Length: 540
Image (cartoon, rainbow, N blue to C red; front, side, top):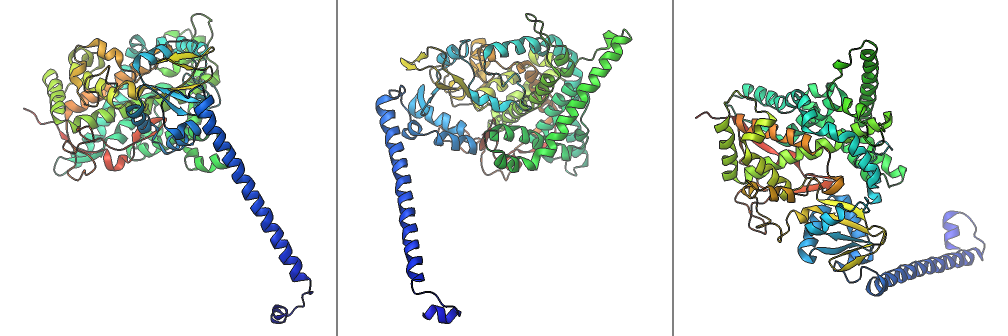
């Protein structure tokens, strides 16, 4: 009654009782729901524990307890960009074979990895569906090996030295010469002859310039302004990479995540469509005028001409578009980051840096532009530095997902049932103590005159699904690094506080920058960690 007088209304005498009764009943229902939910969670948890200990076919394999119960551990690490670090840590703790998820294992021994990747019955995991950028299969997204082999036979001949040599002018102009043009302009404007650059950004611009020009047959307008080019390229590639990671999420979640970058990608995709259409019209024109000898030599033409020698099958318009986008994503990130990582490791190891520079400058005059063939003939130590960078810090993160074949497979005495996910840990294989001496040390000399060591590198994968674009990557990596180290002196900034030659990691070697992995490994903070002081090379 006091409340009714205060608020000016009359509440029936039994109203309070009814309301209190309803509240009590609701609270009982809520408690019941909570108890029921906890019971379900507890039962599920107990079931998973019992299953993992007694019934799981993977129960005898070592691994973290949490990984046996749920995939949440791996999912969080993948989403946060730290799966590569976990793969290395678990390898050090659990060895050559360990459980990664309740239905997945990770394999680290190079011999086991070669056996798996060489087995045509071992297909890629469903995870690779996320790499269908346009909804159409591409070289990387094919799960079954038979379909992938057709695509490899189609495009493989155009990614070998004979055809790549026809594109060397574009590779040099859009790659190392574009980087040199930017750095020379900055140095000309510098009062003291020294400038600070973000080498990671500049290598991305250079490599993307090469790939995009080759797959479009023309230069992207966005590359004309180097200041905005890096942003535009990174946002376009971020869209492709992020979309791959969030495709499995509901659209109401994924669309807001992608919206900041979507218009950058849309322009790139439309530009690709326009380029294919323009080239198709041009080919009809020269065919009608009997000028077939004027067919361009680039990747766009390669994809149009690509034909499987066995089935005589050619790629459709949609497949060409999909391969162009894949080439820009996979070809740019992996190659540019390997170049950047090699520079980073050389700066951390001054003696090897000095040796690489002396090798290059002793072989070539200062005004000479070093070609790919000259690199292969005269710069064995530089080539060894790249091999060691690929071994020690593989840009793919070193994790490839496969599926145990029909009938299962036995690894290290453990039977892996059919359909089980098998994570191939290339990063661990590249640092495997039984196959590499001092596996955590950056030592390019291990590759000098050692073809066997080079054949053990697994960064480009192994078996039939090895990277078809690896030779193009080598053309870019060698020519960019050789000419940059010939023409410029590079030095770490004095305010670099996160790593350096004297700052050692737990293994006693120079600490590297922090990485993140979203499909490929990248610097966690390139604006902070990829700075370098550049000056023109001092003449003797």
